[in-house]
Length: 259
Image (tube, rainbow, N blue to C red):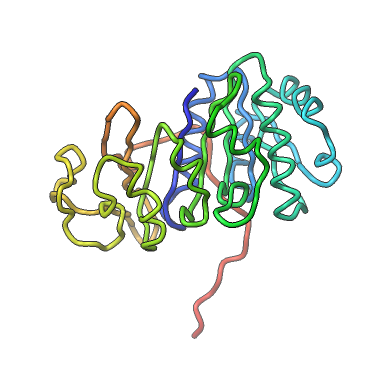
């Protein structure tokens, strides 16, 4: 089964792209489970493409067998974290992952804020690592993060597909440099021309880093580099894509500028 990573700095349009890719893959899997830590996938629910479930303290007590029954009854479901701290969320994600890997049919597990469930520092349940390294049973996975430097190397190195946007942190760039077959500097926001960049990854202006596009102060698209284990590589502008569902993002108050 395929395991894929979507990663970019905050504000790059990562959650939009993740919802697009999830929506596009819904018809391909009998079961889709979206572990929504920040309530960013509710657009799929509003569009009638998935059911919605809250994962709070009561649900955290369910067994893997209980979660398997739940998934079978709700084949496409967004599971939103509710009042669970980091360790409690990791534990319930592990139970859901165990349930997914025990399914008799193909299931796609989408893990938002993946660095929170498989952190670079500290431990996390073995089932989460197993999903990336083995994918026992019929489980595929899509891992989403804006902080590669905080995501454990094991899932990063085990990915079969990478969809990477722009980064500002050298630590984030360092996490991917050994796992992709092209210069990581193409992901460095505001960097210079990228030496050794393959022709298929050039923009119209040549070998330059990925860009974000705005109109009237609003982001209308961003560039990503797609690559996979077969050596396929291409540059994608999310502004050329569209999906049926609306992306809402997390509900939060914005900060005003002083003065």
